[in-house]
Figure (cartoon, rainbow, N blue to C red):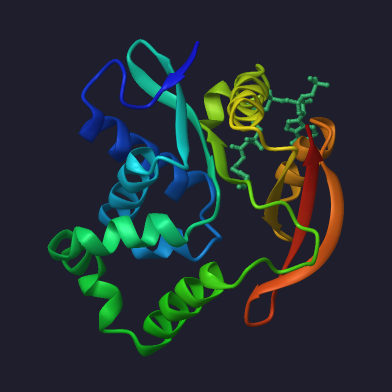
Length: 200
Ligand SMILES: CC(C)(COP(=O)(O)OP(=O)(O)OC[C@H]1O[C@@H](n2cnc3c(N)ncnc32)[C@H](O)[C@@H]1OP(=O)(O)O)[C@@H](O)C(=O)NCCC(=O)NCCS
């Protein structure tokens, strides 16, 4: 059953389990390279941001899938900056790498830009992942429906999803769920992604 992340077992442990699923499932994305501490803080900040949401599905108390979404990452990065001692600690290994530092700045600056394509919805599904043994059983479909429901309740008329070109199963999944490819974009230097739109 899909539920809010903070319900059930300790929220701290839930954010860490979500971070580990992100690292394993969306491993070719840049955020995964920033490590489990950074991702744990990121998902805690998403869950604490009033404009965003984090839903999980658990089996025997353990997180086997999650979805996150909201109205852009800018307010979430602000939440993270407020917890700066933890952020600094989480980013310590990355700060030693000029290329990683450059990309971190790129992400923060990109998140401040209005939207990559004119007419792109403000609401966005940020990430979704399911633990491999639990795939193909409708877990992601239930999570997707839950975030759709949340966007509808919030009065959104559509939401977008940015999907890296390397994530082939994800493209098939989103198209299966009714999202329409809207544009090809480049989020970080040279890395191609497709922007999807889902009308509610
Ligand atoms: C994409 C992902 C979330 C799908 O999770 P899942 O729980 O296996 O998906 P579901 O079982 O709920 O499938 C829902 C629908 O999508 C389809 N689908 C899911 N994965 C598919 C794939 N690899 N190829 C074709 N169709 C697929 C299913 O057939 C199903 O359609 P149906 O209802 O008509 O049968 C999962 O493969 C995953 O975690 N991938 C790694 C993380 C990732 O790439 N995330 C997206 C980036 S943000």
